[in-house]
Length: 150
Image (tube, rainbow, N blue to C red; front, side, top):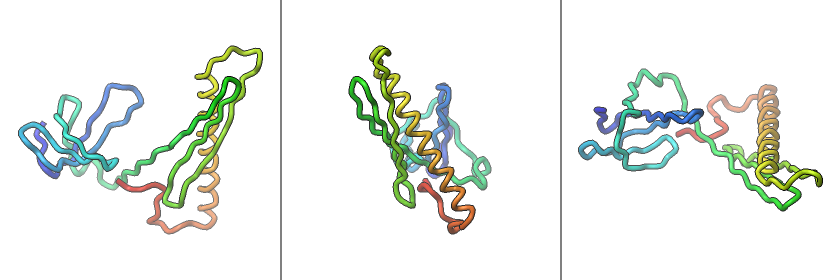
């Protein structure tokens, strides 16, 4: 791959459901690149067959936004509570949910975690959908984004 300083690169993976990673080449020594990734991190990178230079036309008109949902899980043998938090430009959006084990069910912690986390994420999604409805009735400034640009 012939990447130079200032080029944008795309790195793909063979793992199902994992999106490509994008970054900008900020330094080059031989075939080793110093890359500033779109999530703000920098690393030394040696390109392989899963990497390509992204031409400027490949991303015309696109805005790349990234967000992370932090999930906290607290559990005991009978109950699991998950809290999902999304930090936005308007402040944090948070939702909690629980899963309780039926006394006749076996103790399988992963099931309670899956249920509690899934319910918390769904509740967080419901809050975001409701917020979008409110914004349609009194739109915020058009340049405002919910999450930071990278």
